[in-house]
Length: 246
Image (tube, rainbow, N blue to C red; front, side, top):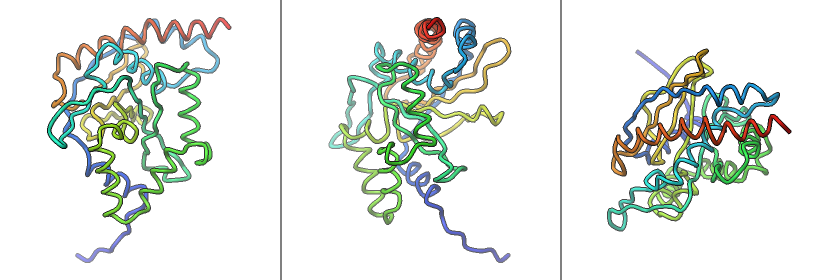
């Protein structure tokens, strides 16, 4: 059967590169009961997105769980590298780049920002000028380079501990909830990835934590998700309620 050659788009090239440098991940799933958070969020006229909420909540959880902000490093010898704070990343889509392929946007230490600021960062990444989102501009410039140079940049960013969080974060968030689907298995260059589903009528949400098993085990992953539920219903809900009163 005769086929035809098709060029690899710039956006798809980036995904291929990221899969090349990805780490082995395993996954744990939990159903979160978000009654108090959902009620608080419903009181707002302008509501932060769930990615914004989860990014800040997971950063708060990681304050007391240092393994959630730790990398496994292969070089120059196998060791762990613990960061003093989390660096959140989020998968976004920019229509001006490729509406079918997500990009990882660096949010930073979301626990040190109000939810409104995290939401602005996400919205700017999706639709703002690239001049205002330098991290995305850098990624696109690197992706335009020939493969040997691209792979060299990504390898450097992955294996130099002080640069790894800047390039790949300590965790990332992605979701197919709006399409009615759920990501069950994935790879990521970062040590942790969170995926989530829609909030159901009973205020529950399915969330999956994909993590690098070389760093920690399922007991910690399960504890982290329980703490995530607590933080979302307490600290995050409190912030939303305070905003509703102003």
